[in-house]
Amino acid sequence: WTAEARRKLRYFVSQGWGDLPICMAKTHLSISHDPALRGSPSGYTFPISDIRASVGAGFLFTLAGRIETLPGLPSRPLALGMDVDARGEITGLG
Image 1 (cartoon, rainbow, N blue to C red):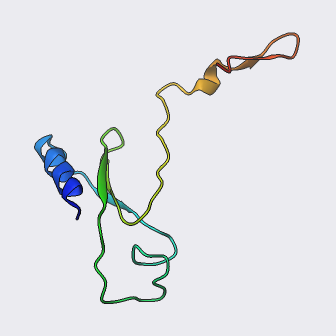
Image 2: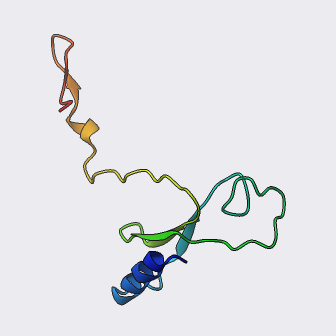
């Protein structure tokens, strides 16, 4: 674990989130964090570079290796404000 990931984990525990389930974000190309390590690699250390909380969804998730995460959606999706007016113009795009 990186020092920052350990610090964040301590914070999450202090907030009462220590019993939440933990998911792991890693490459789909290997059982390890490294997409080049194919098959059943051994002799490597599995690095946890970050940990994040999705408290509303009820879980924590660790990041291993280079992972790009998607942003969460707002509670009211912007698509609900979009429409097509009588002239066929799209409204509500911004």
